[in-house]
Image (cartoon, rainbow, N blue to C red; front, top):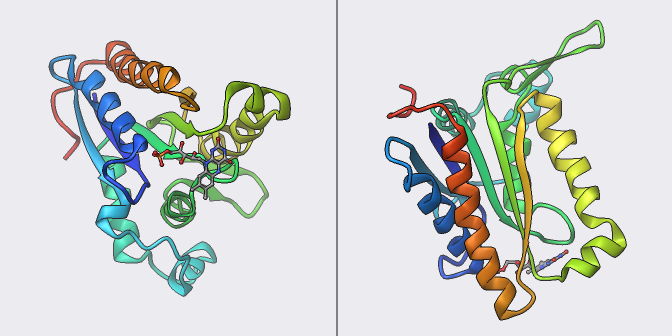
Length: 204
Ligand SMILES: Cc1cc2nc3c(=O)[nH]c(=O)nc-3n(C[C@H](O)[C@H](O)[C@H](O)COP(=O)(O)O)c2cc1C
């Protein structure tokens, strides 16, 4: 299995990056399974939806080169892992913009004129790891985890037909929960590799 682990946090010393490193360590603890980190902040991905992007959506023009490059990177993977900080009970803008721009009509899904949607990402397993500063009680009381799963797991990946194989929230409101979250991140990576078919290399 080859995993693309995507993060969207500007600080490499952040808890988000520490979690991403643990997920990768868990995957790579299984020989033959590989991973690649896509650090959208360090790479300077531009999340702003452009005139070319809306032109592609409306079938008036081609995809931007930077969008195609992201799609190729996803195409090489069997598994996509999003490791992101929860900002205002949602994805951070950088990651939301990456999805808006990269999960395009004609590559991720196709809204055919008769009104149905062709789901085009059935080959891509997805694991979500949201990292929150609030405690479990707050998430449970307000239904934030369910609301986010509805929007992200079903609304985005379900729409494209990509199976969501796991969806976790790692909360770190105090030091013990930080330690638990880092251990859980390793387990998530390890579990994904253990459950996946053996594959030595990324797709060409
Ligand atoms: C703009 C902003 C919005 C945030 N909104 C939430 C939120 O809605 N829920 C939550 O649990 N934590 C929220 N947080 C806390 C982040 O989730 C926290 O920074 C995150 O867990 C990542 O920690 P790190 O920055 O050390 O990686 C927010 C933080 C920022 C900067």
